[in-house]
Image 1: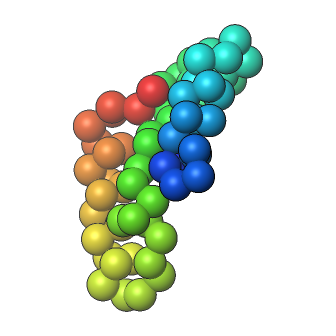
Image 2: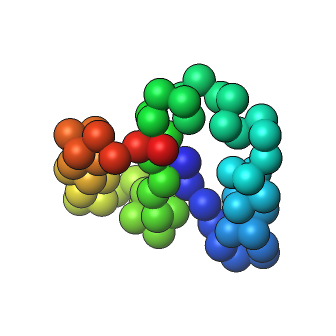
Length: 66
């Protein structure tokens, strides 16, 4: 899940995550939702993609999803 704080995106994301629907989503129940920084996952150049892959592997191995 990427959140763009600009334009109130962070506030809207908080509203969504506090809704009753959010907690009933299968991915949320299974702790398979990960928040990532849009600034890190926006670029698509090879160096950024390699770093993004490393971060994704790290997140999945930690089991720290929501």
